[in-house]
Length: 355
Image (tube, rainbow, N blue to C red; front, side, top):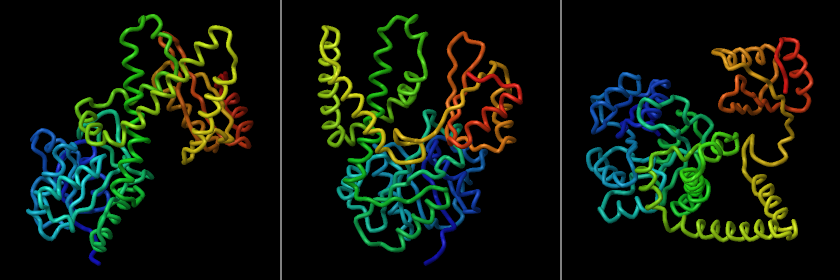
């Protein structure tokens, strides 16, 4: 099978530009296309590719919003009859259905979805390492070995990990792991609109963590949610039932009721969190936390991280707590238990204050 060496990217937003940056690092020839001249010029200036196609691309990646994806995929399949065409939309079944309605040659189409992104969009937010160590879903209902080979090669060149599943399984999985969290975050953040600003000023890291993704693009997410509504609606009903049950348990506590129901709710949360895979998933991570006071001055956090590096201790996770009006922040550093004493004592020796 021929090696992948030429790629066309349609859509120079966050994902398209990030793919281009990652591929250019690997000396892949990349051509960019975007209806916005400003987006295209910015992505080219960033070094994500060029604007003029020199040779027929081996692979075309459509990086457009879900409501424009199917039509563009069909157009690329027609314009490049020798190329493999994929996309990055976060819904898959509806796009495949649209392609079949358009009578597109789906033998050269493979649905794709990199599980990576940022709250900010556009080429200006692009990062060459956006996909590093992230799963990139491949959805295919046919056995085009050459197409699968080229798409897997592309994914590995970006630093991502290819994961294969059916179109239906993909939509069901992302409804749970991506679309549901987005809705819950937006609902919680929306609750703040009617609350006292003085109460909101007390916001801690918990509220900040849970509302972080509420800053996402409403127009894009309206498209995503509408195209995966059939998978998402049952999950929302289930959450609504659980919230109603939790409200009844809390009301019972307020009236002198027992603690068992609330305790079980929290225990279920522990058990559910332990099922999340990855380095930081699970309730029994086995880490210990060193909390360092960092003065609210330019360069202090960078100095802390540099001095941790000189100590030779690996940081498994880092969180920064900074309350409004406070002159210090609290850097919470998770380390393996055997590294805790070494890091704590070395930081004190270096003049840092521990909380």
